[in-house]
Image 1 (cartoon, one colour):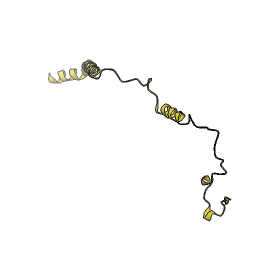
Image 2: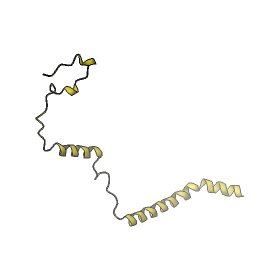
Image 3: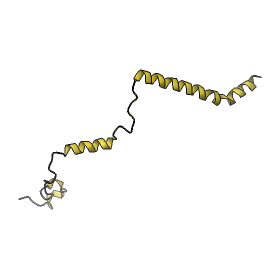
Image 4: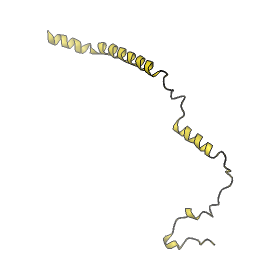
Amino acid sequence: MWSVLWAAVRSKAPYVTFPVAFVVGLVGSQLEWLLRGDPPPTAQEEKSISEQREDRKLQEIAGEDLTKVVSLKDKLEFAPRAVLNRNRPEKS
């Protein structure tokens, strides 16, 4: 008799477990909403990391004159160092 009862409980477990889990989740979310107050902003309202980075870079270069740059010929630190500096032109 017990084996028949346990087999019936085992086969009907999803039908009992789902409503219980649903009610527990619903009560928990309502309690959390009452304790925290306003829900956090959604992902659509927040800016992504890349958008925040782009905004910061735009603010940094807003006051600079981007047409004044140093010539690459004057920048010797970007030239690779040759062995014993034999192939590096001397700056006069």
